[in-house]
Length: 178
Image (cartoon, rainbow, N blue to C red; front, side, top):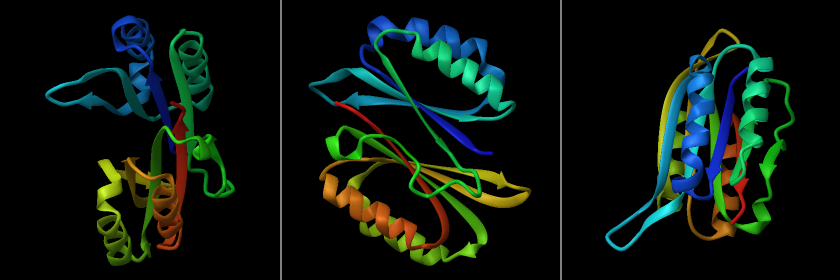
C-alpha cells in the first residue's frame, strides 16, 4: 500500500519543534518528505505544510499519526492508494477551500501518459507545487505525482475530474482548512 500523510502546521515557530521530534522518532518509515510554506518579498508565512511518503508497517504509521494528532496546532490528513479502495476516498472538505493536495498514482503501461501530461500542462496555473516519485504498486512499476493546487475551487475540481479521466490513474485528495 502507498500512503501519503499530510501535515498542516498552523504556527511553524511554535509547533515545528514538537512535530520534528515525532518525525525524527519515526524517520525510518519516511521515504520522501516535502515541506513548503508561502514565501515572497513581503511575507514569510508562519503556516507550513509537510507531505510524507511512508513505507513499512501500517500499524506504525497509525502510531505516528496518533502522536502527531496529539500536538496542538497541527492538522493531519492522509491519502492511501489501495488498489481496491473506492476512488472517492478523500481527506478534508474540498468545498471549504483551503490548501488542496492531489495525489495521482500512474500505473505504467495502463495510463495515457501524453494525455496526463497535457492535462497537467492545461491546468498549470492551478498547480503551485509538483513532485514526482518513482514507485512500485503491487510489484509493478508506477509513478506517484503530488500536486499542491492553488486558486479557484471549481478549477481545482475540473483538474481533479480530468485527471480521473486519464486512463488507469488512481487519484486521491486531501484538503486542509483555512
